[in-house]
Image (tube, rainbow, N blue to C red; front, top):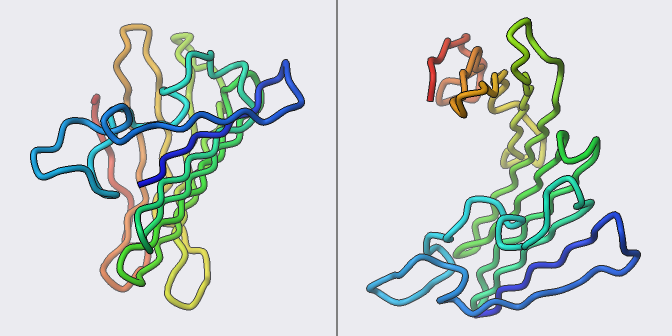
Length: 166
């Protein structure tokens, strides 16, 4: 299995590369490591000892035989805005996901409000909106999710759902 993270910072013009062994990248797995083992961290940049504000690009590649995961994250506005593009292929099935998160404004309580749009590529290769929500980042460290667009099984937008604190 090959696990590689590449990254580019504001202070360099050279993309740097780090290779990981499965035991350093994934949580312990009694059945042995595989491409769908659980990573120790959610985001590839969390494996780096670099502040998110300093990053421009982080790219993750995991290959195991014919299966692979590729994830590219781009950052701007001091790391407050990002795009997260994810492709995976398992047993001849490819999944494409694209998320854009942007700091929108600061609310009256001085909490940052993020807007996130999640899109998936359907079987015809067309990007569809899978979710759209706003998140308050509270001083306490909690997050309030305000609105989430959700779809029915056919992919049609079916309505809005309000969420609470997570």
